[in-house]
Length: 333
Image (tube, rainbow, N blue to C red; front, top):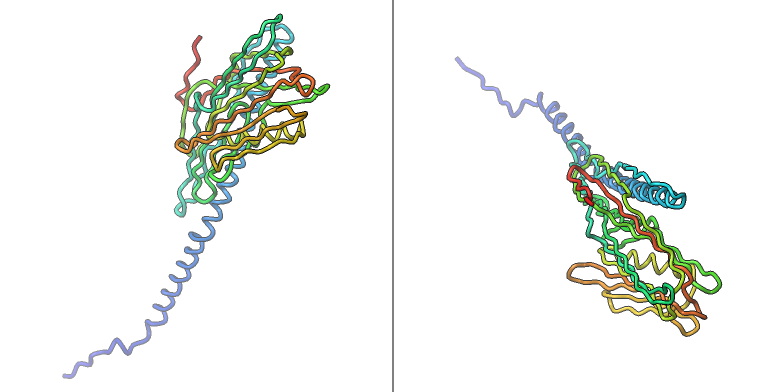
């Protein structure tokens, strides 16, 4: 009895379904590749960019809350009534949720550093014919660090009443602090505010975190009499000094419109000296420590009676308790 052995290689009845399955898999993999390599990065980049803009606005809300508390304290002082401290809270989005399966979240770190961004103001004034020296200091910064993977990594910073946007290739003051200069009868009327931040806290993640602020002390002093050779010296030390230098220089330049000279030493320092009538009205400059990447900014305003003297210097100082996360330390007196 003969048994016929079937030749499977010559049987083509299953070829069509196999090719169809392979083609379907190729189409699916191509579609998946487009999503992973094209759509998801664009989606995440837009989400991270939107988050940074949202965070900038939220930090503006923190500044607005503190400024309103300062105004309330000043109004209470003017009215001669007791100021009742209030606590305000602003929601800050720390990071960006990822795309399920395709992309992981982008976390952010929100931190309060009470010793960062130190400001010092020093000047001489006359009190009943006696020369006196005044010095005041403030420090503290709230920093959101977003290590974006698709968009440019950035930091949003609240420091001494200003909101700064920082990235490795540039930094700028986006919301201006309290610093103004006016010219009245060929003399300078200067106003400046110091904001000290107290507390400690650091949280990392993608969810929303509340930042609470409470103004617990406020002081304002107006000075109107200065020695002929007096200077107002403002010194600031932080990683964001370059943005403060630009802010001070631009504010003074827009108001006074004086000529002067720039002096620059490579990438380590820059100084602008404004001159009128052969006298130096102000000098603003920065130096960079290349080891720590910390800037030191110095602004000097000279009293030049008869040319451009200083008629008023108004200095106010607010002290604010800040709460971030659960590890908030209250100030004890």
